[in-house]
Image (tube, rainbow, N blue to C red; front, side, top):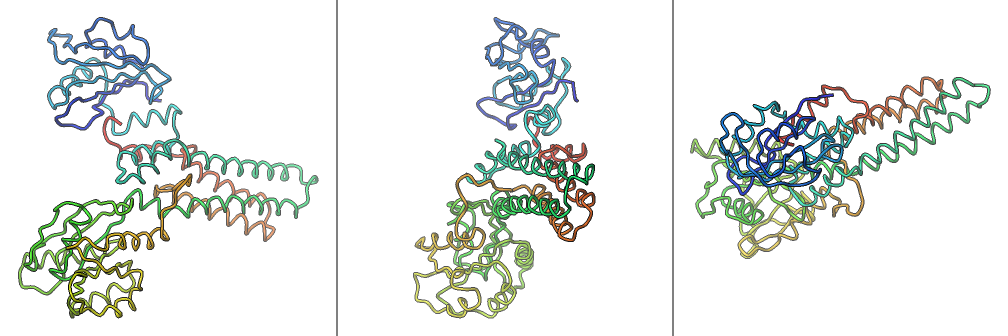
Length: 458
């Protein structure tokens, strides 16, 4: 267990109303008290109280900052260690001066995510709850935030622990039958194993059903807006972003590069990529933009293919349609406010009626239809709600699939009357895979890798 005292700036760097420096460890209060001057010594303060005072340089006596200091004593803290939070004026110079003084008095600069890592190592939270902290910070929509908040409160952990408890009981039953075979009938043991494996597999299946939705809520849908020049791609970007992110003119080829923007469509986070119009061109800069558009097209989870409803399809659009037949595509027939010339029936025949959306970006028509089309592709028409626990972390999804595979093998082995001591190997494997989700059986290197993704001060 790490026993030294750590310190870091817990708020984003830059100018602001206040900045917070967090200190955690056995010497957190003593180290902070060496640089603090106020009516009461920090070492005499009760837990979970705040004091006003000043930070001084103990060597020179110079007053450095005016602060509010919060004392929180173990174990009722985030890290289950003594924690001091120093609130000072937001700014590069003031915060750095206070942090430097703390480091001179014996604190060590915290590693990324080390405060949360200590909360995990000290048993306050498990590994899945710790990973949810970073999801809370990075959430790109209200729904994603709610999913992460629920996981940080232990919703997934509780279900995993119930599953592991069921598997422990099953392994105990098998152990008894291995040690005392005369008290059991082989057919009864196999039936018991199959029944327990079936129940556990159903629970894992239920969690995995939410995996696609959870992963999308966590990471967003990479969405490429494609089409030939001047059909309304940049107008669509601006409409969804609700601000002028892209230049819109009547001149074809205005967009020369890929413009990125995160937006929310009906609570679904989209990472929008507004691309250069795909066409043959002799302009070198536009050629580079077209090539980047093709790259964005190949990497996108969803493609919004924009066409001009007031004109027939062009040759380049027919070629693009052939490329997009097997992809997740929504065709946006723009300029509904003008007389329609496009081959609408052909587009419906290729992509399906529910994936062809008629819009007028000029008059802001059709946004609701686009939202419904996106939800129908990725969420079977709507997002699950209520108390459903989403599995959103790629690591968790992988481990659940491995546990599912091991339990499936155990079930098949029981059906084939494989010796129960061999079956127990697969059950134990599933139990260990589930344990990795909550950190009960996980390597130090994996723990370091997970917490290295956190920001400093968290």
